[in-house]
Length: 410
Image (cartoon, rainbow, N blue to C red; front, side, top):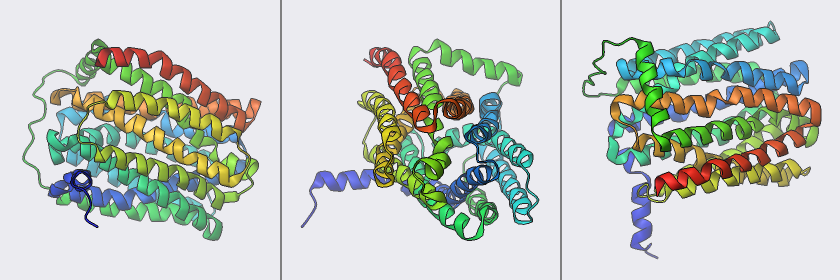
């Protein structure tokens, strides 16, 4: 049976960014590296939980690893607008590879201590604070503005495909041979992305010609975001939604270990289910042919994210909980990747790195406060109650900011 022309058109639209050689090199390196990144994240949270058995310590791990992404991305965004973005990314990926190697060495030799885990997590957060705004603003150099919408969605697809594979593999490896091997495999995975970045060929980009200081550049980006009502409202919704909602990941080891009694393998399955939902969301966005109606889709997803978290918090059955995490992952990615697209389409090229640094601050930088809040609430009220409360609050802030965003996009 021959598929209808509309279906063929959607399939062609889904992968149109792959016609760009540079994007193919970039994305294939990411496919390998991101699997390792997710493996390390799951193994690290399980290591802390094994060492301490404390939800509060898991919250502290999230806080220390993500706090630099609140404090430093503005610097990273200003550098991304002034310097060669590809060189910055090669440097940050090399530094991440070394960080994972040190963590692997400490764990495999049995010398790892809790303070070392926190220190290395904070170091990785500092590296990512430079990496993430640069990475977000680098995509447009690979595909141009005409395919930017698709490239962002495909990049998110790869991220979330790794989110399915990485936790599942980590759950098995942690149970069989321990956390240290996950850290070592992550270190080796960075070789692929570094080779891909070095193979990319780009026309020479003239960085922003500015004699102003880095501080002046940072302030210029902040003024643009605050004085542009749509950008300001979208960033505020993203920040509050991230702080309240995304912190559920911090508590997943407790759900797997104490609430659902499924162990490290169960943790991998739970996170893998959320990853499947996220992958489906990213592919849905990639198949869209334009940005029309994206504002309503993003707001619906933000509300769906809060509602899905609330429903997940009420389940005590492992299979049902795993199924409920799929819509959690789906709505979260439509909300966040859709916001990324909306912001990039409304940002001048000269300010792209700095606006993406604000996006990073709101998406990841608010998460440490959410992790600390979630860990504290779980300690005081119980883990399911903490997640349910955060889901309800996410619904509330969507209503508060959503009306303004719809009015400004009309």
